[in-house]
Image 1 (tube, rainbow, N blue to C red):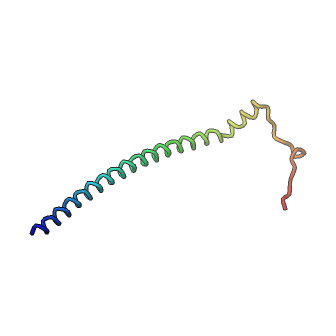
Image 2: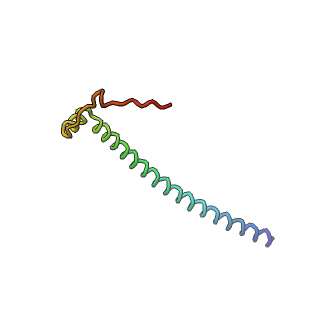
Length: 86
């Protein structure tokens, strides 16, 4: 009888350690998941902001104003060269 009690006690203690270890691991994974989700939200916000900025910068009126301010002119056909790649 004593042998069975010792085996059962050992199994119960081992099971307890396994449960505690798995709970701790699950808690750590949940914290990592929360941090990754937060980073994902931040990156999505930054991406949206960058898309808006790109749309603003690609505005043709803004480009035309910048070209006029910099005294840029459209190149003529004589200034254009065609290069053939074989």
